[in-house]
Length: 231
Image (cartoon, rainbow, N blue to C red; front, side, top):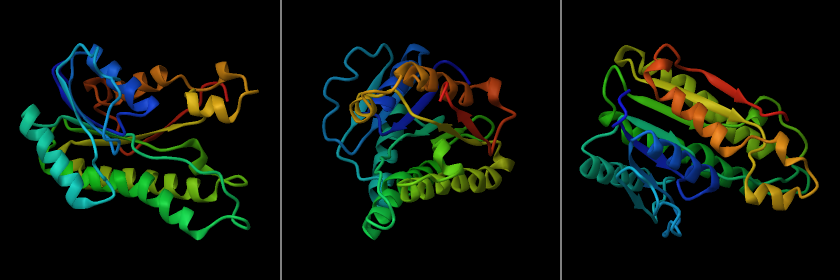
């Protein structure tokens, strides 16, 4: 895809979202940055490429997702790639946890991606449209306390596969990345004794996402790619 591609990033105000936005900006992309947070807190003031931040968007609501995507199209003139980063995490055992946690993680991890994808479909160009979803390595096997999170991220993998099949004839590629632990301030605070050097650097994960939106990845669709660092 050309350097001037138009990219939508959901969850843009988070640690990974900001890293991905800066990586795309460096490549010359035009960016539509979407987040539920109302303010980007100055994360994108130094972006090289043209971009705008659209805050206060609830991507669990199909109508909100559609309005946001239509706004991006109006401002950028179209969409070439969608990167779904919006999501969250909770560690909670089944025995001591809450059923509501399953609903919550389903909504913020899977439903946000579903609504954003549906809203973008009519705008993605045949032959070069790209969708990259952020799943999780934990989706392959859930450990203690990871049931709700792993289930929601397994749903992201199935969404990726099903949509890739639907869009094959349009040559719109849909893939997912499956990171292990991402080196973010929040994860460092939760696990202060860990060896952070073994975790996945957000910039390194951004490089994989950029590759999947490029013409070099034109033969890859329906894939869930493990990005493990040294975990």
